[in-house]
Image (cartoon, rainbow, N blue to C red):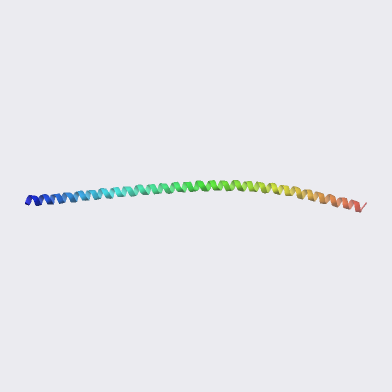
Length: 105
């Protein structure tokens, strides 16, 4: 009977050691999983930031192209208006000269 009690205690002790070892392994595995998950999240955040910057730069380039196009159109229109104004000024000047010449001849 004494041997049975010793055997039971030894088995309990061995079982306790096995449980402790399993818990230690479990904690180690959980910690590794947390680290890996953290690295994955960090990498995903970096990738997202790169993608955001890429898209922002693409949008910025599109805006700059449109701005240049609009500025070019504005310059063309301004040049046309200057030419028209210059012609109108010349026409007015010629009209006044002709009128002046008619009145003083």
